[in-house]
Length: 141
Ligand SMILES: [Zn+2]
Image (cartoon, rainbow, N blue to C red; front, side, top):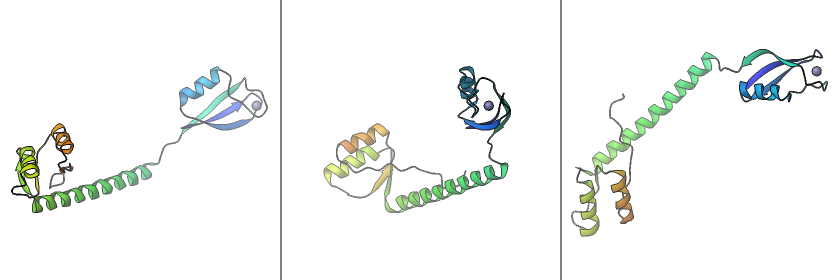
């Protein structure tokens, strides 16, 4: 959104909002800018005052975002720790191990490892409970 200070031929000054400068240009070309005097032919743009958030506000927003991301990362690390403590890492064998647990019911345990999205999809279609979790680094980047 952009706010323009407009001045009509009649002397009236007013402010109007436009979604962008192109929209203003478009309305001006078609004489669609209107003043309360009814003379909408000669309205000119005075001072452009784009709405810019102050530097202070931008800073506080970015720090809020940083805090949020840190919190998310912390939760994901906790999740990773939990998985590592409570299940067995099978790496690349994940898909075959998951199938053998599901079909053979042997050595039933929680496992985690690597699978492509396609493999995960296949396992889910076979009715095997698989969850995908974002795997974060243990140390902050
Ligand atoms: Zn006017």
